[in-house]
Image (tube, rainbow over all chains, first blue to last red):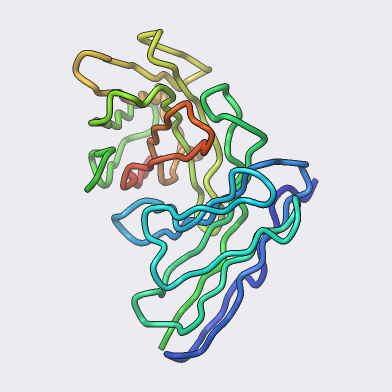
Length: 115
Length: 113
C-alpha cells in the first residue's frame, strides 16, 4: 500500500547546488505531477506528465526540469538551486481525467531548504 | 493570476460548530471542483468533489454547495471535531487531457475541544 513515494523527505542545499527529487507510484497511474507548496499560496503546478513519454510545463516551471523515466517514476531536477526554491515539493499521480472522479494521490512531500 | 480564490485564510471553530470555507473561480471552462484535506507533514488527500451539474453534494458531515451563476462553491463541515483540524484546499479542473488541478491558497482550520 505504498501509493506515491517521494525521496528524500528532507534536504538542505547551498545556493548553486543541484539535486534531483525522486517520485515513484505503484498504482499503475498514467499521469504524474510536481507541485510546490508555499505558505499562503496553495499548491502550484511546476511540471506534469499526462502520460508516459510526455511532459509539459505548469504554472511555475522556471528553474526546474523533469524526467518521466517510465510509467512509475517522475523526477524533478533543480540544476542550480536558489533560495526562492525553498519550499515543500509534492508529487502526485492519477489514473485519468480528474473530471471523472479520479483523485490525484499525493506523496508526503520533500521539504527542501536552500541556504 | 489566481484562478481560484479561497477564504478565509484561517478559521477557528468550537467543537460541534459548523465550519464554512468559500472559493470563487473565474474560468467558466472548469467542470470539476474537488476539496482536499491536508494534515501536518502529509500530502493532501481528496475529501469530496462536485461537478457543476449539481448544486450540492453531501458525504457524512461534509457538504459542498455549488453556485454556478456566481462561480462560487463552498465546503461546510457540520458538527466539527478536533480531528477535522487540518488545512483545506479547494481546487478546479477542466476536462482535458492534462487533468491539471488549480488550487486555492488554503484554509487552516482549528477546531477547539
